[in-house]
Figure 1 (cartoon, rainbow over the protein chains, first blue to last red):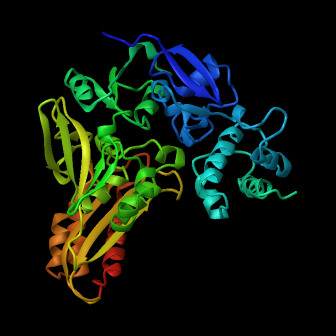
Figure 2: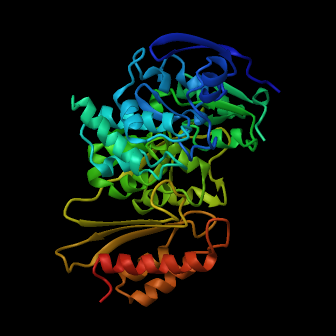
Figure 3: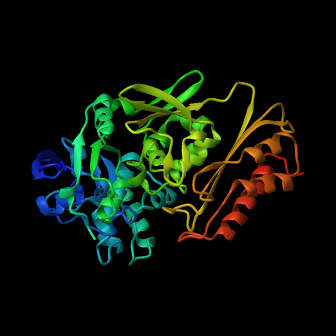
Length: 162
Length: 287
């Protein structure tokens, strides 16, 4: 039987050119965590139900457990590590910290990237927009209310509110 | 148990022709991965050789023609939700797209993949059936069109021949002068990110004013048989002006629900009949 050999796959991750020599069907999630040592992206269910592994590919939210790495060749991948600027948290991160939107933290990277994808498209979302945008992300700690409040707080922060 | 990825092959393809050559040689197409990669992770992916079709532009895009809307097989649920003409003319497909998974799934799941995966609980097939869609199947020999109503033949079985890939979905547009009534309901355990227990889609063309007569209707149901089914007999009963009870009886004969992990046969049958009543009420035929 023919099988794929490992191949060099070049992509941009959080603005940096990276190359991984991996099997083309390897999950983007595993390449990020194990080959590129970016462990901020979490594995939850491994079947696209929980959103813990969500990242942005060319600005679009995807579950990285369902993306074979060959499909991000030459693409821009944004993970949770790419949001903060040096020691300054991104507005969504700051809002989650301020309002208790994160507890155990496993769902948080995916929640924040799902929120980022929403705010990039809809800068002034309603709570209903936020609920829809985060419907694919499961949290087992907070009960969601603080997460939704955090996203709406981030909207204020991005408008320069104190 | 995770699969050993070394047992699998993912071959690249830049063009539809290259993909068709691979498919003829026994490869299967991998698009957005929302079904295939789940099986891979679970150690349940039964096929080893895959060809990556995600980057093939010929399979992407939505074209609006005078008589039909042609959706490339790689059209994602997000593409469906954001296309102005699709939103206006195919609201049931848009509703199916918006109720399929969360945003991350909608950005990756494709119409072609949803059809090829052939799950009887998939959400877009009932809408496509109710709109009278056709599929364009491509192979190295060329293309052929098949009515979507004839595509699924049994559980996970289709009329696609070895070497064929779904290239596009052709949905006819309504003729001018008709008032078109669209009715789509998905019933699952919760509103977000749930797999259907029962999915009901109906599209009726009503002539004249509000009290006008239904002169064409297509009804399709998901989750209630080994394949997504068209309820032809019930459609004829509606056009013939028969009673709601007779229509319901015909729906009952069109479906063959089972007990499984997601629901029971009894519940599914009752919900299918309730949705039929709701639809008749919606078009003003329950008097």
